[in-house]
Image 1 (cartoon, rainbow, N blue to C red):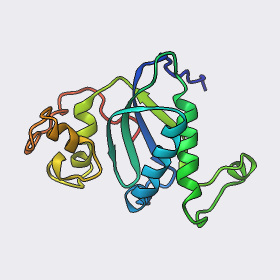
Image 2: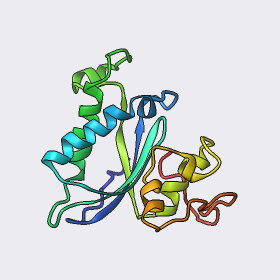
Image 3: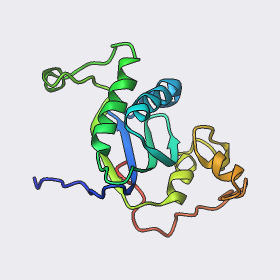
Image 4: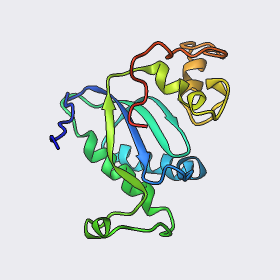
Length: 172
């Protein structure tokens, strides 16, 4: 299998998709406070400008801009995943390879970075059938976008703003 090479752009803006290992669990929304705590802990040491996000039960999307000269998003993701995982009880089954690497069985090892698409990130809860309008999903930066006048409260109500895009699965 060919080796995957991640995009690197110091000070750049990145779109990420990060998944739980068990896609049937709802850990991210059931324990959203742990996720916020994990982000806060990492941001206090390694700043991240979070431009947009959406947290779904089993995966999340976010857009980050890193400080000038900094491209260490991989370090931040490892720390966020670790901080979140430390707060959960150890009830998941863990494979031998994860035990050997001192990993929990919560997150998929990989994550995906892509070109940025703000419409996709806010429409994702509708795509997955959690709500009928993006503004109805509480774990999303769409509320700040509405407050700031960037998007209307009824944005994408009754229509899919991403239906004509070629690839919108982003590792889901």
